Every structure is written in structure tokens, then in C-alpha cells.
Image (cartoon, rainbow, N blue to C red; front, side, top):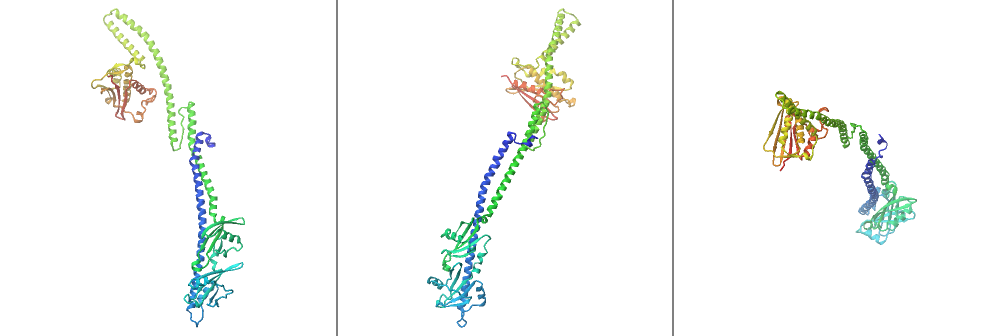
Length: 579
């Protein structure tokens, strides 16, 4: 079909497609834009939050290391204080082994400043300020650092041997940098760690080359305790997060700042992956919408094109042409209605041909009536002349019977001529009982031949109505003929027709009832349609009941039908009474 090659050649198809664009693609595009921005923001926030949590976790791990070392030093100080003077200042072997794994050197400093090594060798003792000594004598741990040129600073811890007896001295341990900063070496991949204090001293740096990073820390952290900042180095963008450890109360040391830095591309990798995958998903979704819209348009347009082509064939005279539409929707129902219409047009065409033939017969009949009437008038004239000669005996009787037959024949021709003619000039006051009696007499011979028992009943007084006698005879005649036809399959002894007349306050009723085959409901709804008939073409034209309805409408009358298949039918006609 042409539609399959190009479905957008019709305005309806283009309208459908525009509707799909407006109702589907536009909302999807708006949803995509909002969702993309929202998800992008969420992923970026989650990535930054992950960096912040890692930074905080590293800070807590370092602070835990400090507390562990402080506990070991206090335990060692308690052991030394508990040892007797005779045994000297010594430590248990198991504690010495533990200290060796965490401290590079361990010694006792007397009140006079003398150093007694316990583990390792003190290369260069650290001098303390009076404020630091007071912090130690208060029973707290002192954490101090000493810069040593370009190498990594040395970290020291001090505790008092006996806070209640300052003469006993203090315990000093130089922290082993390798062991202490091992927790920082376990950082995530692609992450650089830097630890500084608020005096801008670098305590630890995983990448000793990137001094530029250290300068960025001092410039961008200022006095904040936690946060993030971005920096560039050698064309690469980084995101750094920092978290501070407050050491003043416990260790009398400056605040430490733990800083983690990752390349921006690495930390925002989930967002980058999402940014790549999301457009592909959107394109696929829009493609599916587009294909679905094309499919629906094709599904809807094929029945339309089918009906369009069939309509052209009908217009070309191909009455009875049918279509086959299996769409499962209203188009399929429309196709069924189209086929029914096409069949009716074919039947209507046949009936129109028949009606045209009947019209020709009617015109010919008028001429025939005229031709018959001329010799009949001559016959009637000669009969009148013969009767004027006063014949006697059987001749007069025979001439009289011939005259009665001629007058009867004239009456029939007059009725035949005026059968379909009605105008306001013929409307007169008349009794419907008289009309019924005339029709009953006219069809009496036919009723007898069909062995039908016809009863005429009149209930009460009937007011006059305003009507045309010939037209109303045609109405009652058609109804009686239909009743006679309905009794064909009924047993002869049971064939009955009842014509009943009665009245109410302002209405005169005529009922024609039979006990024939009845009328099915589907036929009852179409009984007044022109050219609709259940009889064969040589028995009926389908115009009888349509003519009845037309005559009754001109008389402002109503007609109702009560019928039950197998039991019979009753027609009830109501005429407005003349006041």
C-alpha cells in the first residue's frame, strides 16, 4: 500500500505525529533535562561527600594512633615508676617489643635533664618550653614535632613518670614515622595525603614532589576546620577535602589538618559515566517513542486509506463493495457499518430501479384508465338510451344489472385515479368507523378467500376527525393487507383479525390486531424505513409502511406497534379529535 511507503502524505498522519511529539517527546525532553540535572547534582554531591568521609575517617585513624601511643607511654611510665631502685629503671620485655614497633627511641629524662635510653638511641634530644613542661607535669601527654630540613619532621611524645613527684622525671619517645604514617599509606587509589599543622608545617606528604599542593593548602584552608577546595597542577584539576584534628587540650600541640586530594576526573567518574550513558538511554527512549508513534499512525491510517479507496469505488457506482478491517478498535466497527451501508445502497439501487418501473406503470395506468373510461362512457350512454326506451321483462332487468356493473367499474376507475392524490381541499370531517367499514367491505372477498375471520368492533361514541377519506382508506388497507400476509403460516381455523375503534377525551383510536407470526425486534425498528421489506421483489416494494407513516404525519396522528414473535401484532393509531 502507498501508506507503507510514505505515511506522512496525509494531513491526519501529520496531525497524529505532531500530537505524539507534543504529548510524548516534549514532556520526555523536559523530564530528561530536569532528571539529568538532578542526578548529576546528586552524583557530584555523593562523590564529594565520599571524599569528605574518607578525609574524616583518615583523621580519626591518625587521632586513634595518637591515643594508642599515649596509652603505651603511660603504661611504660607506670611500669618504670613501679620498679624498685634496686632493679633500676627497666621495662618488661613484652612492652619493650611493643615499643620498638612504634617508637624509634625511648628514654627517661631526669629532673636535671639527664637522658637514660631504654629503647634505641636518642640522636638529638628535644628541648621543651616551660609551658610544655607544665602540661606534662599535669599528667597529660605532650605531642611535639621538630623540623629537620627537607626530611620528614620528627614527632615526639612526653609523659610524666609520676605527676605527683616531678623529681622522678619524664618519659620521652620519638615516634617511628614509618609505623605512625602507615595508616595514611592505606589511602584510596589516585588519592594524595598531606598532613599539616596550623603553623604551616608539613608533617606528612604522600607525594614529596608536589610542593605546589602544600602551598594551596595554606592558602585555601585558612581557619576552617573542614571543607573542600579545587586546585590545578600541570593541566590537571584536583578536588581536595580537609578535616582538622583539635590536639590542644590532650596533647598541647597545634591543630593538625588532614588533607586528601584526588583528580577531579577520578572523583567524579560516576557522574562522567552517567553523563555518557544517560544521553544514549534518552536517544533510545526517544527512538522507541518515535517508532511507536509511526506504528500507531500506520495502524490508524491504513483503515482510513482503505475506507477512502472503498468510498471512491462506491462513488464510481460499485455498490455492494465491502472492506475488511481487522484493527480490533472503532475502525473495525466503522468498517462493518460501511459494509452495511454499501449493501443497503446496492439494495436501494435495485429498489429504485423497481420504483422507477412502478412509476412508469403508474403513468401508463393513468393513460389506460383514460382509454378505458372513454369506451366505458359510451357504453354507459347507450345503456341509458336503451333504458329510456322502457324495455320490458328480462331485457330491462339485464340492462339494469349491466348499468350497475358499469357504474361500479366507473367507481373503481375513479378510486384508482385518485389513489395517491391528497390535498388540503379533500380534508373533511369524517368518522373513522365509516372508513374502517368501507375498507372491510372492500377487502371482504379477499378475507373470505384467505379463510380469515375479521371482526370489527366499535367501543362507545367516536368523535369526528379531520382527514382525507381516500388516504385513510389506504392506511387501513395497508395494515389489513400486512395482517393478512402475517397469517399465511397460521392454521386456517385460527386466523383472526380484529379492527377496533374507541376514543378518549381528545383522541380517536383505531387498532388493527392479528394473531399471526409477529415481528422480530430487529425488523420492528426498521419497519417504517423506505424500501425496507421482508417480502420478495415480486410481492412488495417496501414503501407501504413508509406511505402509512407519511399519511398519518399529515393527519397529525401517531402510530404505535406491539408485537411478539409467534403470538401476533397490534397497530394502534391515534387521531386528534375535532373539538
